Image 1: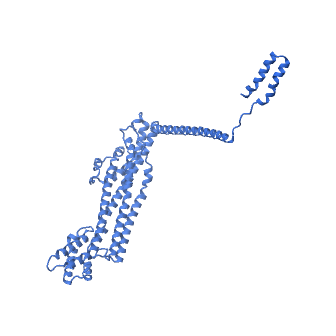
Image 2: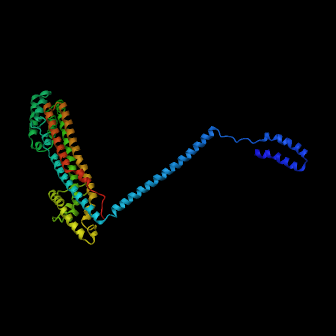
Length: 438
């Protein structure tokens, strides 16, 4: 723009020079020449520091976005490659393995699963035996005796004598109360029950007789009934707590035992292809009738026969595999041995079910020490309360608690030894539940 404005006088002067004489040209062009410096072009404006910073920031932002876009594309490409690689590996493992490789993998998996079934059956047998022993423990029955044989030293007769001597009950009526307590302690109905109930029933019967006696003219007065009730209430509460602990423990153990029986039925059902694989001759059809879910199991399951069967399968798999190796090497159509209708394929494919049942067994196994600990805690709490109420002497309480502690410790040690000797986790880890043949 500036250059165009500056050139216009020069062009005009050139035109006049062509028309006018030299003097006139000089006179005409002189003012134009003098005006030229005033119309010289100005340099373009330079950007300020703020504009330069903004331009640099915009450039950096643009480059950052391009780098992020490249990084995202790279990650997407890597994920695609990884996904394709996983699919390719799965394809190779499941579809493109040679028949000989699949045959070898199937044999190893069948052997590992057979070992797992054997260990599960062994643990089930030991766990059921321990559960039943705890259910039949004599310690619970001993606590129920209303006589001096009670390990806690609580005799209903002696306790009634102390109550009569320490409370305001006349001697003749108090003697009748003691005689009644002695009669209840010797009653067959009271002593025959192998639970904590005998002492509980004896105290309840004694209170009922006291209340009934108050209705007769020579019976206990209402004040005396109140004294006897208050005196017997700590005993009643103590044995009620013992009975609740016993009932809860028995219920928990019975439930655990029933669940173990059901699980034993379910595990026995997995043995069918294994017994067919090793040509087990005995009839095992009775093992495949499991009770419905939630229903108590019957006693038709012969645990001894299952032990014989599981040991037979474990000891004969080696010879059976050697025979299969020879058949596989000679077979023109090697796929027949891996056919789903054969024995090797269903035995291999049962690995997933075996692992699931083993997990259930692990859960049931872990429940037993919880049941034992709960019962021990309830017994300790009841004894502590009985000692606080003056029912139990300190030496008796200490001895019973020590015996209960030893019993719980022995059960825990038996439980731990059984688990340590069977290598359950190691054998479970050898099974490949997702390797299947179709």
